[in-house]
Amino acid sequence: MTAQFPAVLPTYNRTPLAFRRGEGAWLIEESGTRYLDFTSGIAVNALGHAHPALVQALTEQAQALWHVSNLYDIPAQAKLAEALVEHTFADTAFFTNSGTEAAELAIKMVRKYWFDAGVDRPTILTFEGAFHGRSTGAIAAAGSEKMTKGFGPLMPGFKTLPWGDHDALHAALDETVAAVMIEPVQGEGGIRPLPDQCLKGLRDLCDQTGALLVLDEVQCGMGRTGKLFAHEWAGITPDIMMVAKGIGGGFPLGAVLATARAASGMGAGTHGSTYGGNPLACAVGAKVVEIITAPGFLDDVRAKAGLLRQRLEGLVASHPDIFDSVRGTGLMLGLKCRGTNLDMVKAAQAQQLLTVPAADNVIRLLPPLTVTDADIAEAVNRLGRAASSLA
Image 1 (cartoon, rainbow, N blue to C red):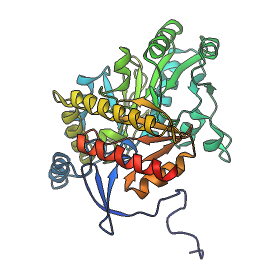
Image 2 (tube, helix red, strand yellow):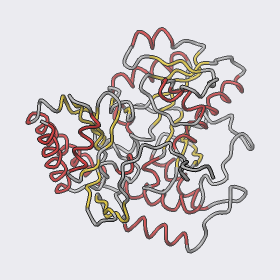
Image 3 (cartoon, one colour):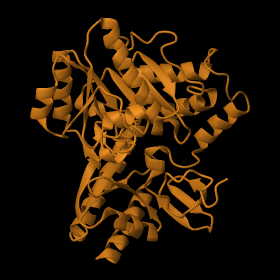
């Protein structure tokens, strides 16, 4: 071993905190200090930490069967796929272990669709500020220098457009375009929702030109916006969709959902995953979907989101020298800061509140969907104290 080089590859700029236990929206550090967690593992722990129903589902499956590979039928996988098909636009699902793996399959599915059609449509349109993962295909799709520098040559076939530039989109979206790939709400890009009318217009443009519409709902999906998936607010459906993060409630799980038409080229041998759709992950994922789609659950998410938004608007009004505005939707909200957002993240952490930085000088607030009114009030109080400490 080379002296002084860390045993864990140093690709993360970690905060020096180590947590030993979680309860709902709270994390307990090794010293016993309790932190209010408004990161949810970056929108992963959708039902909070150690949700009893998820613990039970995982424990029961772990005592029976962990892994067999996709050489065999996996009943838990079929159950989860059927639930997703029932509650979404999709006809079919493929299970991965992460969002970036879902992005890779979505790209392959687009390519195979047009190959089988015998049509040369080489370009996938993406947008500035996007984040689709850190694999070679995903960074090529996003195209930002921050993610791609030093990792060339990049996978060809992507064209990145400015966010919100309708003229650029209309000019680029022609019969050479295979697909448009977009997040209905950008997360890493600074909590930037695509307006409903724009998503509707994008669906219309894809229909007019024949391009496939690929939605990345890895961060904004699974109830985060108050609907099961964010695109439902616009009343449209995609052809292909990437899902991950919240679908496993903390267990590594992702999926690609697709219509039968978009997935028509993906026969036996065209794709695979050793771990994807394993019994453990799917048992937990099925329970997550069951809970989130239960009557009243998303109504409650929308009520909590309204309360949090109202409190944050009051916070911005009280600290106009610190905060510029509130942005986002549902329980995927951001505070745009006037100073450096990292200063606010650190100040909040000093108040035992955990937040996530994003682009455009924004801090993300991503509480579990099960957050209580008391937790929301406490979080905003702590943000207020953090803002006062920076004033």
